[in-house]
Length: 198
Image (cartoon, rainbow, N blue to C red):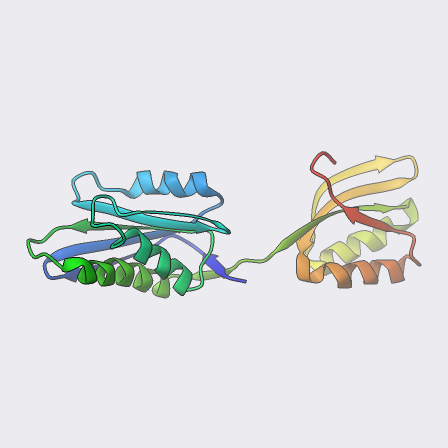
């Protein structure tokens, strides 16, 4: 699994009198990425180039630089550093010396990569959501197992025959959690895939 950023990060480089400022942030969705781009873009800068990746969704912008010299290298830096759910904006203040296409690719990609390399990483954990049904006699065992697996209780409904819980837990804990509960309750619990309306 790739990582995301633990917190927003920034890094500045000066290349041939042009100043490059990379600002990166973790994102929950693509709307958050675009909001961050708007929030940190500097109106009087020469260019505000950016890219984001959120799973299979990604976008980049050269913001007036020659096509392919800014946005794509920033996206390549996100992917190259092993990040997901991340946005990076690289702002450039032109310093009077042209860098050429290769120089721009190195400047934008390099500033973004260095920013991400120095940033605090946070592993992305794949989560699974399940619905669990248990009788009243097993509620104590279920709550103990939830705590042991690092599971989060999303919704709890008491029914005439027992308890229905919607839970979220790390996907890699799911099999162990299910086996542990089935053993502890002599197979009296039911765990099913959660549907959004539950």
